[in-house]
Image 1 (cartoon, helix red, strand yellow):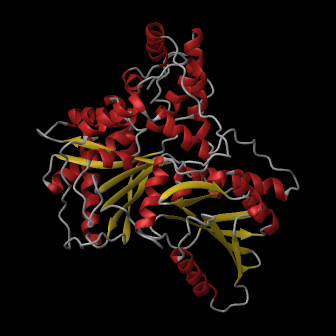
Image 2: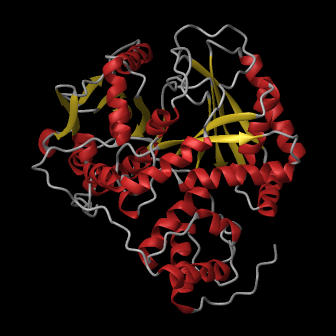
Image 3: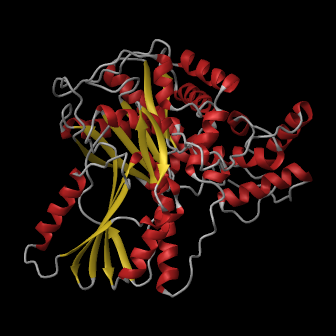
Length: 523
C-alpha cells in the first residue's frame, strides 16, 4: 500500500487518538490518514484502544465504529459526533476497596470455586510452566524475585474460605513467601528419569483452595550450570495473560536483585479483589440486563455441534488430549492479510470464518457455536495485574444459504463485534441464562474453541542464563477440538488439540488439511 502522505493530527480528539494509537501499536508517528489495521491493529488492541479512549475523552466507542472507520481522521470525526450528541460520559474507574470487609470472588472465580467443590482433588484447572535455565543461576536472587512477586500480587495470595457454603476471599500475608521445594539431582545417574518423576508428581498434586497458596514452585538442580524450574498456579488466581505479566516482572526483579539493586517495579494502584468488587457493582442493573438479553437472543435454540468421531463419546467427558502442529506459510499469511484488509476483517476473523466453514462441512450443520477466549483486559488499570480475567465468548456463526466468501466474512465480523461489545458478562453466567441441556459427556453450549494468541505470553530474559521450555506439555483439552493459532513472524502457526477419546491423529491431520485448503481457496 502506498502510505498516505503524512499529515499531523488536528484538534484535541485527533491528537488524543494519535497518542493512544502510537502507544498501543508501537508506532512513533501517527498521522491523520493512517489506518488502524494497516498499522498492525487487531481485535484485542481495538478493545484496549476503546477503553483508553473512554478514559481520555469520555466516550464509550462501539468497536463497530472503529471497523467502519479505521482511518484516524474519520474515526475522530465519529467521536466528535458522539461527544456533541451525548456529552462526555463518566466511566466508573476501578477503586481500591477496604480490606477490613469480607472480599468477594469475581464471577469467574465463583464458577471455578463451584467446579472445584464438585470435583475435589482435581488438577484440571492447573496452569503449569516448566523452564530450563542454563548458566549460573543466582539462587538467592531467584528466590527473592519469586517472593517479591508473591508479595506484590494479592491474587497469588488469595485463598477461598467458605462458611455455610458461601465462599469469600482471604489474603495470605505478603511475608509468607512463595512455596518452593529444591531438588538436587547432580549426583544421580538417573537424573532425567528422576526429573520426569518430579514433573508427574507436580502435575498430580492438587491445591487446597481454602488453605493455599495457590501457586508453588520446584527448583530442580540438574548440574552446576543447569536448573529446571517448575511453576504451577491454579487457574482461579491466574490466566494466560497473567503468565506474561509474571515472566516479565520476574525478569526485571531478578536482573535488579542480581545487580544488588532495589525492587524496580512501580507499585500497583489496585489489586484483583478491587476488580472483583468493581465487577459486581458495575455489571448490575440495566447494564447486566442489556448484556444478558443480548446473549439470550444470540444463543437461543443452538444445537450441539456433532462432528464425525472415530469412537463413540464416553459417558463422562475425558480431558486426555494430543495435538498436531499447524502452520500457514508466509505467502499464504500475506495473502490472508490482504484479503482481511479488503473485507474489513482482522486476520483472526478470517481464520475463524474458514474454520467455521470446515466444521459446517464436517458436521452438516450450518448453525454452529465456536468458543473464543477473550483476554477481558479492557481497562487500563488491570493490564498489569495477575489474576483470573480471561472470559470465553460463544460465537454463533451462520453458514446457511451457501454464502460467498465476502458474505461469510461480513457475517463473521458482525458476530465477533457484537460479542465483543457484550463481553463483560462472564461465560458462566451466559450458560446460566441460555440454559442449554446439560450432560456429563460434553461441555455446555460449545464443543470447539479457537484461541488466537496475540503474543501475550512473554519470555524470561535473564542475565547470564539461556532460558527455554522444558519437559512435555501436559496434554489436556476442555473441549472436543481446540485450535490455537497466532502470528509468529511472517507466519500464522500453532496447534490443533483434540480429545483422544474421540479422534485419531489421522482424522485431525485430515481436518488440518481441509482448513489449509480452504484458506488457500479463500485467498
